[in-house]
Image 1 (tube, rainbow, N blue to C red):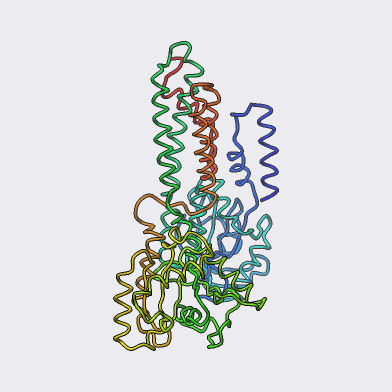
Image 2 (image 1 turned 180 degrees about the vertical axis):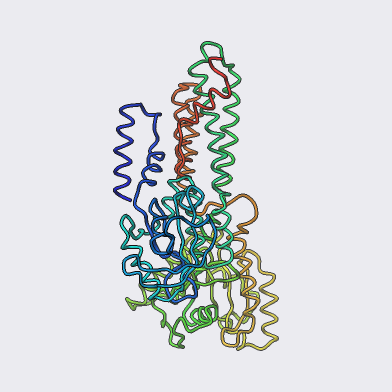
Length: 510
């Protein structure tokens, strides 16, 4: 692929010199070169023993590869029709497998090129034999990572957001991640950004038309007022889109949930209970956990990165002190902090419980930070309820229910599991709030790069307003920069579209 892009740049430069900037686009040349590139192949169904493995071939020699190892002598099979064929080595004619083969002539294929697929048996020896046979054909080589999808993008089959959605779908581990990835792969996010790009392109075209033809009174001043309104509306939409509390990014990367609290409160026991396995060492000796123990979980269909941390206390032990520092660091970066407390350590006077908890949160967890701004990410988890009589538990429960200005609280026993289901429901509700429903409302941002380009676009739109009455050319440049930033999200930027809209909307020269 590196050689391909070198060829693209050379062709584009020569075209630029001969014909000018708008005569040829780099992407169009990339598409031409891709269709003249090597034919590639790879195992598309993943490694390991399985019933069926899929080997994909893409490129101009795909038909030749299909004929060579599937026994089609003079013609190719009907498009998109599965046929059972003998798969043989093209040199020794040794039978490798009996498999289904399919032919996808371009451009109606995943990559836009001629493609072939071999649905072979999934044994390692069969897969190795077929891959070796394909690699022995002239002009056919093994694909590099992501090369099929790269060719699909260059052929215009997918834009960058759809490519990212496909990658997220392949790596999705939870139900919510799958739903979000499918929606993005279906183009929902791309359509939103393309609508904004079209709107912005129209605004830019109108401004440029006013600059070029306004003095001749071919275009009324009202056009600029319409652009002002359109740009302001687009800014509001972008700002609302950015104010999503990073739901899409959380859903894609996992919600950061940290278990924190004093030593021997039951943090590691809760981790093991959530993991349903002994992921962390549990010991009655304080300070057993000295580093962050991290594990990935699916809780209620939402991805969670769960971290158990060292007990938070003052200590002279250097190793434990470093563990406490890392624990506080994780708490600061967390989306949800499960604050573990030992029920047996609460004050006997229940009226003192709220102030005790507030002091505990302030002094032990936040190290002087503003507690009110951080309460929303905390969930109090009172452990060891099995060690207290029911009457005392009822009194504590009543006290907790009426607490104001403190995070929600749950009572459980990590030893017996009592109260765990209720705690899990509360945690799932919190995850639902943080991630939202990926199928409801407008599509969410899923990548940090989307957020960065949108913020750049907003800054450029602010430039439009800044220079609107001072220098219309600089104002137009703000729109052009905003459009370029949007185009970088989807991978589509086309200056020729502006000229099309100028002539379509204003009929200049009619």
